[in-house]
Length: 137
Image 1 (cartoon, one colour):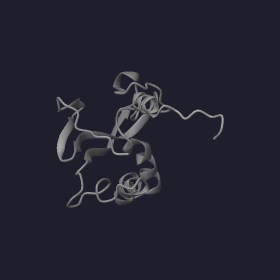
Image 2 (cartoon, one colour):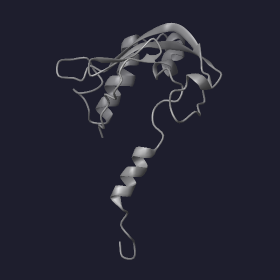
Image 3 (tube, one colour):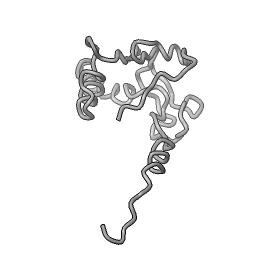
Image 4 (cartoon, one colour):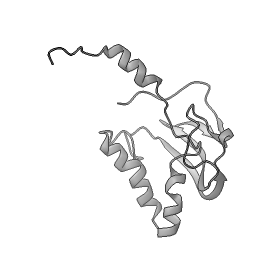
């Protein structure tokens, strides 16, 4: 460590918090795997396990995130796996407007999103006038 300067942790946190976040196609991760679900006849239970339960377990959030159970945060989406949409720049809701899905038709449209049991998204619009998310990691 001799000759090296320790980083300023406060500035690193600022850089991390300022980084681009979120999904860029604007409709959610379910659309990524929905074609595989249809093509390979993957059950909705397996899809949910891969995208929610296993992800929460990998980052140490089992029992809080990734499942609907007593004591968990009740984060979930209601989506139509059969509805399609075309990824266009104007539907992207994040700072990062770059996506490999631009112009592609994807299956699966999120209709409603709930964070800790509170509806925050419905029919393409925010339903909350305040941010309900919190830093987890």
